[in-house]
Length: 118
Image (cartoon, rainbow, N blue to C red; front, side, top):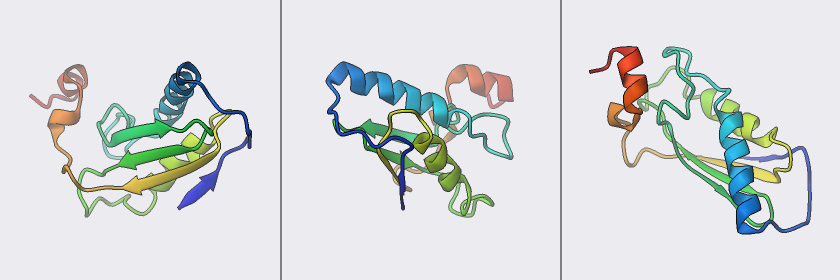
């Protein structure tokens, strides 16, 4: 699914601007939390890639903790919507991927410690 962003701009971004916009998109994604684990989906390691193109379009690769995840039907849409609401973003496309499979090793050590996952 492709969701239009709030601002359609034709100006191309240079590498620094792309990096800054990528950071802003990631911060927007961090507002989406896994309903079963009190951690946002980015810090949980569910976001595999955020790529911002020169034309401001954003491609996101995301996984879930398992294919049977109870929020499999809604969580990717929440992430896509949050990214699309980032100021200056064009079209947002989210691809749900299963390779590599999710592992708690993707969760940063400090968050695993907070969750007692050691």
